[in-house]
Image (cartoon, rainbow over all chains, first blue to last red; front, side, top):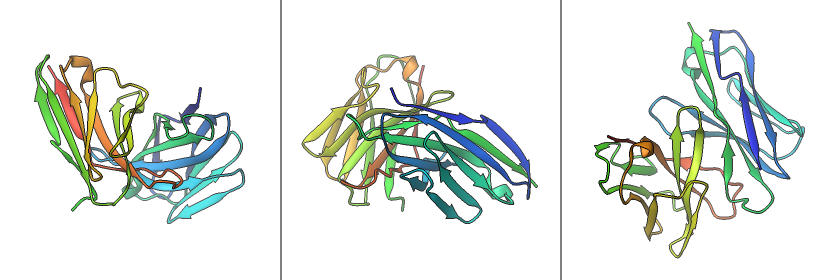
Length: 112
Length: 113
């Protein structure tokens, strides 16, 4: 059974204080690892897809990295507008690969 | 206008009532999905459809049914709502053959009293 665990559950940062969110996963074969951002009262918004260990993707202050067991979302010099819940999801390459398994998310608060 | 539109955005109903949540999309994607989000449980797949004639159960389909009326429309029904179906429901779309990135609507908050 695919599993996705995100940590920490919640993170408070001062504006400009860089940090990382973790997503550890268990799959029989990874077809893709996805990061989403979700604002309160909104649907998740796609950020990145990572396919293989060693891959990195960047967007503004966010950088996602991938190893064989986990992914990190690095946030450099965050701003208050980066406050949101960040979701990680995986797609297994095995049977039922149409489904994404989501983690419970990390709620990030960036304080001015 | 949003690419994936859900109606209603909020609904309060009573136990035993029939409820329909509707989703329409302008992204031109073949694949559509219904997810449920509960605090502390994350997003869980209810049903998905790869085209008008292809509908499949997801992880938590009991108590729900769906209808794919057209490529752009996918509705979710609760035939007899119960309180533990109180949740935030999301419709999503994806391209066929793509990596699987999902594009979500803004959600329908359902409360069953």
